[in-house]
Image (cartoon, rainbow, N blue to C red; front, side):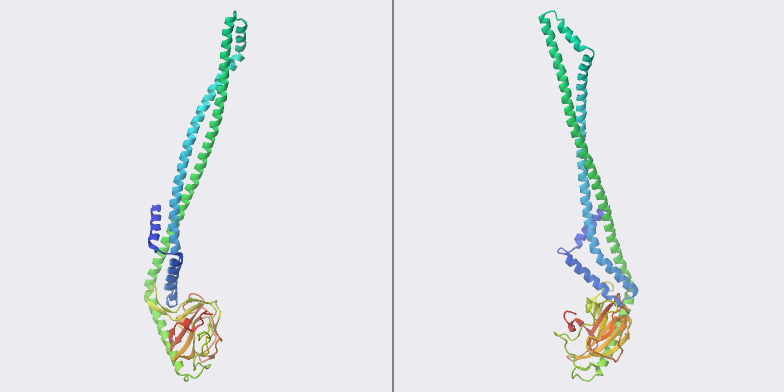
Length: 417
């Protein structure tokens, strides 16, 4: 049953894999699914966050678990074949040993027979048989009788020599067969030991395969449970997302109102009323924090919650408390707590191509500016945190034109440094 299940798992893995799949393709696919499952956590309920985390864990681990199960199934087949081969070698070695033992037994019988023949001569000599033969020669009455008696003695000596030779030969054969039988016995024992080891490997492989298969089943169950939990939370997640959208609309309105209060463009000013100057190489903003981009701007369809959403900025991973600086000169329009965005700051910088340019900074652990304050490019305005709905310390950074989110990457240095 186990072997059938393992073969089915292995076959399923092979059938599910693309014909030209590579480890790089698999990693890219997993990374996409992980990103899609995790990027929406800022608008999810606590239960949905857990479901997304469980789903991401299962999705990340499942390909490796399926591969391990398929490999384990192959190892079981190989181990079973090795065990069968080892058992055949045991059977052959034991058959060879049985034959050698039979030949040795026959040789031992010949040794006993030859020993008995020699023993008879020894016994006869001990009892005076040799003296009697000598007397028969001495008491011969005629030359003819002497010749007959001498011929008889020759026959007796020849028989004695033959018996001794037979004993020597029989012992030689027995010694040789004993060596052959011993070697056969040794080979049989080695084969039996090898068979036992092969059987142990087969059992270990079967146990490992069973564990790997169980791991696949557990991950599939975890993934299905996560999807079910997310489905239950879909309404609450959508409501939370709608709240975030409404808050984003209020932010947009505040930024447009701030821009409307500023004088017409006429040059860069600390208040942000003039044209926004370029920094270098076409970039108009500097990086607000040192770190690595972990999430992109853009719309995406979430595989768990089944709705489209806009990730309104980029996420930059950084350590808790890392400094956040203003990306350009400007005026602080917002600085306070803002629902899922946590501690949230927005700065109006001026105009570019007729559009009012602002930047916003979410999830801060500390806000170090206040609304209406004038700030300069590179000035410390806050510190990285994980406030609001967040899975860990990072900066969610937005660029807004006339209050509407756009891709920040296009406004930053190409190196994001």
